[in-house]
Image (cartoon, rainbow, N blue to C red):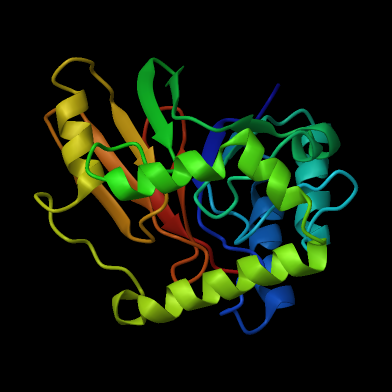
Length: 251
């Protein structure tokens, strides 16, 4: 009898982020969680920004993350589907990660039915009409010519530039971290989901990106979930076949 009954969701680990003091301990905590769920996991959804930076050069990938990559291989080798969503930090995933680890990569929102419930799954960046400036920037990042030009940079330079950009971005937003829920009227993803269910029913909208832990009823039959992160909260979602719940990992 197959006892893999649960589906797990997590996001925003930001492995390798320059603002994290102990990278080994940070990675190990995520790996320990994956190890703790491997015996009853039916599927695992990693919902974006798992890496703080990722770029696949022709013969090179960013240094580190060895234990995490090994754990992904272990899960997929056991026959557990692992869905890996690109986020705004790890947008440059091409063919190496799925080929080597067996993960299923999603670069767009993924609409699926699980146990008779409809799920709208996405990292959450750039999908609302309120992010015009970012959507223009994202179109540059996903442009094939821009990606090819970045590949011409030596990896030491390319990764260093990305780390510098990441640190400066966090420093400029220091006052807002850890992030806080801005209220239903000011949360773009909440407004987006409420508009979406006017024309198409979904039982669950599940997002990363916001680094906030929220389980919100947006109608009598629809819920919106922010998964939190693995920087401050170490939170994750669990679907047991009938109920969805947010939990916190305790080693």
